[in-house]
Each structure stands twice: as C-alpha cells, then as structure tokens.
Image (cartoon, helix red, strand yellow):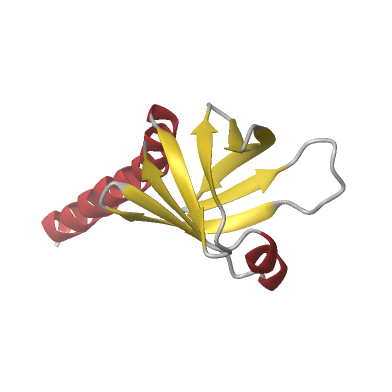
Amino acid sequence: MKKWIKSVLTVFIVALIAGCASGNNTQENLQENNWNVVSTTGESYTANFASDTVTFEMGGFRRGFSYTIEDNVITLDEQDSDDEPITFSIEANEDEYIFTTEDEEVREQFGNLTLSPI
C-alpha cells in the first residue's frame, strides 16, 4: 500500500512540475519569435513579446501592453489607460498560437487572434 501511495504521489508531483513549466514555455516561445497576427475581425499586424510587455504594430502605428500568462490565459493591460485588462485563452497549434476571448466586447474590437512566427 505504501508503494502505491508513493507511486501516486510521484506521478502527481511530476504532473504538477510539468504543468508549471508549460506556462513558462509558452511565454518563452512567444518571446523567441516575432509574430504575424491575424484577427477574426480581418485585421493583420505584427507582435513582439518581451519579458513582460508586448508591442503590436500595424502600418507604422504601435500599441503596447504589459502582460502576464497564467494557466494558459494571457492578460493584456494597457498602461495609462482606464480600459479593463484584456484576456485571451491560449491554445498552441503546432508552431502557431490561437488567442480566444470569451468577452463579447473584446471579440468585437480585437477578434480572436492567430499568431504565426515570422
């Protein structure tokens, strides 16, 4: 019985460590590339992720946000703005990332996003 409990505990700890590492992995992957972003609103632009900021650029116009990633959810916060933070669920699809929002206003303004490495 003790052996079985040790085995279950070991599997649980390994899964917990792997889960914690995967969030950092997404953030590291986003930082390693520049990204083409295609929105379901029909817009396209580029994104560049640093350690805690992201810059979106379209036609020479830049817009920056600070960001955090927790549990495969990215939260974007525009400094010096009264707007609420923007959240997207993150799904990896081969070498692309798909950002999906449940917020109707965010979906209308920004759409759901597909990021492809440049």
